[in-house]
Length: 84
Ligand SMILES: [Zn+2]
Ligand SMILES: [Zn+2]
Image: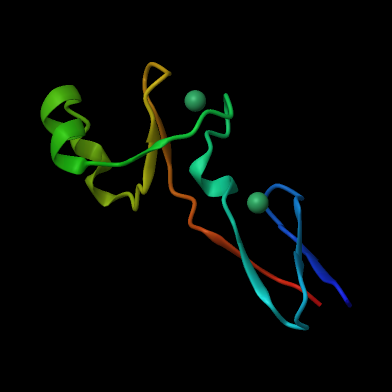
């Protein structure tokens, strides 16, 4: 069976598809860029009330890693890799 592959531009991971032009979604955006841990979805209310990151309102923060201080905010989105 033919395999087509595509490389994630973010992390370099190779994804495979048995269909030409098949799209794979890389999960690297869910992992912290600093420590590699799986991040938690960002909850603006919780984070703002608890930590007072009001200036984060303008950021399109999607995920957060709570293992750091200050916490690491990620604006990365799922990466779609087209396999060719
Ligand atoms: Zn990736
Ligand atoms: Zn981290």
